[in-house]
Amino acid sequence: MTARPSTAAVRRARMVDRLRSQGIADTRVLEAMAAVPREAFVPEALRGRAYEDERLPIGEGQTMSLPWTVARMCELIGAARGSKVLEIGSGSGYHAAVLAAMGLIVFSVERHAALAREAAARLRDLGYLSATVKHFDGSYGWAAQAPYAGILVTAAAPEIPSALVGQLAPGGRLVLPLARDAEGKEQRLVVVTLDAGQLVEQDHGEASFVPLIGRFGYPRRSGL
Ligand code: SAH
Image (cartoon, rainbow, N blue to C red; front, top):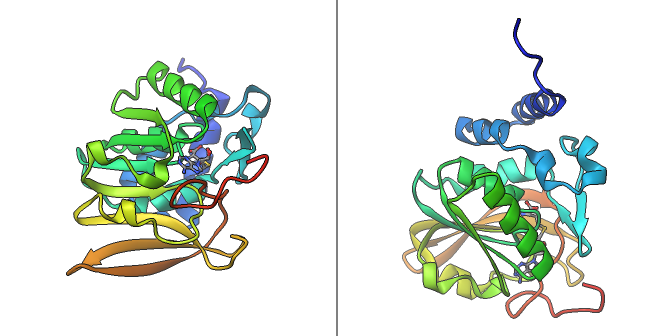
């Protein structure tokens, strides 16, 4: 008799089927998302909803991105196995785990100390040893580890943070939600590349993220 797959495994397989039907085609991304236990990154009380199509609160007023958003950003980053990527906004650590499961070397930065600590502990306990989380303002990037084949920003920026562009390897891609209005409500997912020293922006549709707060993001407001 074969063991019954756990509820989490069944839900995870369903999530991956849904991602496929929503247009995610990159098998490396789908396989990574089929492998990472998303429920381990979600607050205990919300574990039953870990595989739903919704943004879940993770503490400190922050949210975990939709599975589709994580998958799409991973597709867009397009970095080769074994290359270095930078994530700004570790949050729960889930996205970093998916990138690590794709065979990437992940550097991830989080501005909330408690979230950074918890994300680092989860990644270590689950064995994602190629992901490193640090606590600081990631709008500056992480120059000491640069250059990166890809940089992902999981919070919406008012403009392209120039510090990040400078940390891309030749041919590297910066994937980020950019706000198109002063309030940061209208956001677009954008891929930025450098072509002969010129910034090239490619639009990938609507986005909905918490704000990037820091030197090259929005100023800190009360409660954020
Ligand atoms: N990738 C995360 C989603 C995080 S939500 C996940 O998989 O769970 C965005 C995160 O960006 C929040 O945790 C927020 O605190 C963080 N953030 C916002 N501005 C930041 C900055 N300047 N540097 C680092 N992290 C930042």
